[in-house]
Image (cartoon, rainbow, N blue to C red; front, side, top):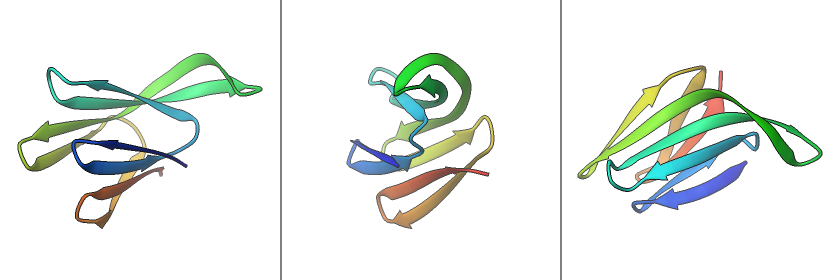
Length: 80
């Protein structure tokens, strides 16, 4: 699992996933990757959009993702 902390919230996500954070619109996009020998060779499908709206976190699953909240500001993203 990989870990990233953005806006005082921590997200744990699968190793074959990357994220892009857009500060202007306060959203994170998690995308699955296809790798060989630790090198990304292609991007797979988008998995999840996380939107920050003040103190609220809105999860918008696009594909097979389960979000588990493990504490007040900590989440684990996992595939179904």
